[in-house]
Amino acid sequence: MPESGRRSEARDRLLSTASRLFYTEGIRAVGVDRVMAEADIARGTFYRHFKGKGDLVRAYLEATDQQIRARMAAAGEELADSSAFLQAVAGGIGEELCGAGFRGCPFINAAAEYPERDSVVHQAVLAHRSWFHRTLQDAFQQLGAADPARSADAMVALRDGAMVAGYLSDPQRANDTLVHGVAALLAAG
Image (cartoon, rainbow, N blue to C red):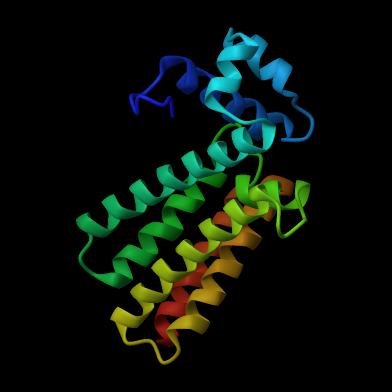
């Protein structure tokens, strides 16, 4: 953010452009010069908002993370029942992977491009995954699951598999498999 703490239209434009390009074409395939050109932002303005490409990629992942957190928080407020919440999470993921322009999970994609665990990009991916797992684990715990952590592990694995399968093969089948898998987890208790 700019030093004044106010939102900046230029920063928002940079982040929006970078998000679109990074997701559709890959992070390493898109240079900062292209992001600046497509966002119609001067180099000095870019560096007022971001230290470099790594900082921009981190901001892209954090913005994506915040969007997901907001959707899940809204679902959690709307659905008091943990079972309905977990089914809604699976349904939302299924809608995403069946949507136009789906290119896989932005976090899995970023981790594949930045495998170095100490990179800021990989750390942003791990932070998102940790939050997502904790959120699922809390829901399974509220349901009284015998092993909430293991149930959350299984749902994360189902989600990851559905994201990859949804991109590489039939998205509807991946969605159906995810929903079926989560229903089985819920039935197992």
